[in-house]
Length: 220
Length: 318
View 1: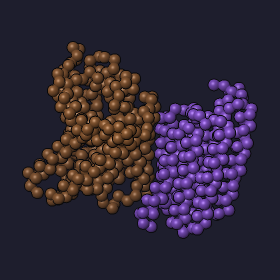
View 2 (view 1 turned 90 degrees about the vertical axis):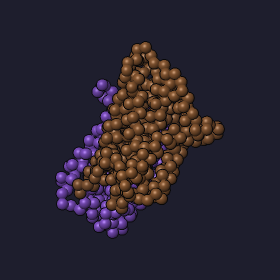
View 3 (view 1 turned 30 degrees about the horizontal axis):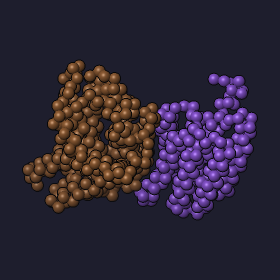
View 4 (view 1 turned 60 degrees about the vertical axis):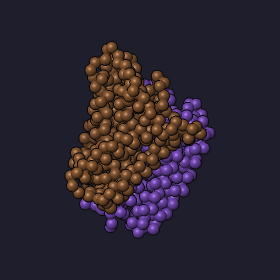
């Protein structure tokens, strides 16, 4: 395996981590959705590159599903939801930006240390993909923690799932059935979340989830 | 090549960073004016301004100490040395053993330190305000710069600029995502350090927004000329640094003939022109940030530097 194969895989996987950071940085909902679509697109490129390197044609189908669902369908649906909810103003972050970024860097460092220790002896490409995938998952979780707006929490959840797909394609031998069922469950989740968002909005006149805390009597 | 030839090239390098520095500023102003469909001042206007300032009487406040008079020369000397260390048209200069990235950061850091001290020296409100803001930005911009340097040094295996430039020219460098992150981070640091538009507006004296201008408000005459010249030199330094680290094409190698050196100089001016146009377009298309948003902006550079180092560490340890 030449160094260039590895370098290109490294480029795409590193790009995914970088886009996770851009997601953390964005504080406008429309920009957030556009960056999310970009992340899905880079993920599709990464998956297609893995398909080429591993000589596994079914991964091309995964890449196609990723583009169709996550780079087009879900961002468009969320765009329309945001427009109908009328929440296209600033996202309220619970934690300030610079501490969030530093926490994100710490999470990336943590996942690299953990993954490099755990997966010693495996194929370098798989090790690297697993470490970056764990970073993307943790950054998605961080995004869900630091945002109070329901729509950006949904985006955090979806970007977490991007990390899972990256891990799955890095490890050889992921069956296509699992892949397709995961993709469809994400779509179902989107529909459920969409209905849920409108219910929250009807009930509380807001999609800020801190209102729910107040309602439960956990006012800060 | 004899020692005399090496010395000639080194002196040429020192003049080559000093003389076009005002021209670069004039060029950027001209392009910005043309983008706004104005005619703009002539290209040599910054030279005329400097000559006019040198001829004027230097007014110094009664409360100023010796530091206030010494600082313009200190700042200018530190910036000039730092700029002269960067290989602009040829690698392997006579003093390139000392052209270390960390040394350049240290020279710029001490220049900034003295300028901030001078800002507070007279005791007016604006000077203190400018100094405190400059320091606030520096606490983020300097670590960001150092992290970017670490990322580059980890890839090239050295912090010496000539060596890094030669490494970047060789095919051994491969395709590195860390370098792309480092480039973006360095551009952000350069914009912040040179007080260009999203951070500070170089064309205004509007009280509430200025950072660099507030710090040097008390200076006049030849002192102001020195400060202005070192600010122009600093912009040229960052452009040369970015060109040397990330676009080192056209640099004349060690012991090359006259032709390659002339070609190197032409390539250097072409790079300066491209950077000037890019900066002018960027500044015209973006609005200035609120001061309290600036740490977020520079924080991105710090984040990119850290991430570049981490990614490099990752692929290096596999």
